[in-house]
Length: 193
Image (cartoon, rainbow, N blue to C red; front, side, top):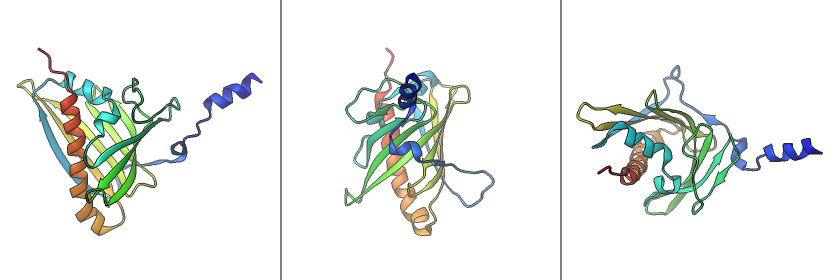
């Protein structure tokens, strides 16, 4: 009987547990590239700590992007808007977002999975979840600047199978979405006195 109880604890009913991530492959040249850079007037440690501890409901909150749910493949934990978030960003977290485009006329749901969080490499790597409009990876990298500032680069390799979406729609809306995300993180960084 105890093994049945143990199995039920390990069983995750989230529909996202069954979806795989479709990451960028360096050997495949059929991806498009998108790049944005952000400068923070604060040292790497403060910036990094905020990126990996910010509540996803605060990170993904804007006119266009809205946090829907977080699901952890490691623990089975599910976090919804309004619930307390204590764990910090970790590998295996699936982040589900709602996108409101064209002033809310079109609503889309997209999923990302956190694949790597490495402070030594100064890297966060995220892949798109299958059933999203696009597939590929996002690389958020951090660089300490000599003046005590930090540079954060956000490079995305993506494709959807639609030329119009990849060349016209995606770059515009992706820029808006990540600007909202990085702006929210910037606002959440505690300023040391």
